[in-house]
Image (cartoon, rainbow, N blue to C red; front, top):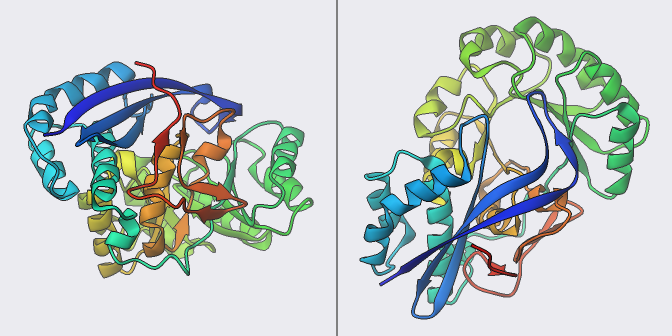
Amino acid sequence: MMELKIHQFDLPLLHPFTISRESITVQPTIIVELIQDGVSGYGESTTNAYYGVTEQSLRDSLQQVRALIESTEMSTPGELWFAANELLDDTFALCALDLAAHDLWGKLQGAPVHQLWGFSTDANPVSNYTIGIDDIDVMIAKMAEFSDWPIYKIKLGTDQDIDIVRALREHTDAVFRVDANCAWTAEQTIANSGPLKSLGVEFIEQPLAADAIDQMPAVFAHSELPLIADENCLVLDDIQRCSGRFHGINIKLVKCGGLTPARQMIELARQNDLKVMVGCMTESTVGISAIAQILPLLDYVDMDGAALLKSDIAAGCQVVNGVCQYPLTSGNGVTLNSNRD
């Protein structure tokens, strides 16, 4: 049978990270460890003020499924996810559990998860590096610090958004993506799309507030750039509402509940002719290594979370200048550097 351990860490950031609605310097995270036959699998969920997720709420949720976990022998991660989903209404906790289950499953099988699924990593998309909102000269300096990355995602939502992108463009020929994190109006999005396109921006992520989705058909019709849903696409049931309103979706593992539902979302998105991106939170290599397992299924990826940290808590898949490097280990490839409850 499996054993459940819960670990809590504070992840220090390399720089203060600011988006349109908050700024942080430390990211609290919860690591789930599932143990069977002396083998440990690791999964992660960060806390999130926007969604009301705290360390305590995650611990409380995971305690609700402790009896289930500790009376179960690992067979497939999907079986555990569906059983836990019957007991939990907390996708963040489900995510940490599901990622740990996949890591453990792969390690018990003796192969990386993506290989067990039959995926080839030969044509993986490369990741962007995210530049948080700051003074323009600071944003330029942050970009210069990671000057070899091929794509940058620029957080916007200020009164000088076009000036920011124009200033950054003077220092690189890399592809840009922009993420307004719900800060724009429909009119601003349409007006900004032209200048942003001329500045080499690939797409706009979540320009409007999530509750303004009824305004998105007009934006979809008139924007000069593709639009990617984030806050409007949390779970499987959201995907069909994005069709005709967005050109693609950004799946976050913590928001949907892990790799098991993420694969369902990818399949349904393809059926609705939507591009697929997977994004990360500001998380450790534990969470990033899980994203790496579904990388071959994606059009775009944002898996720079561990690169934003001053120090990491784990080893596993590493993203170097946007390219994912897989370790020669099984499961999701995760090894925890140190444990602290």
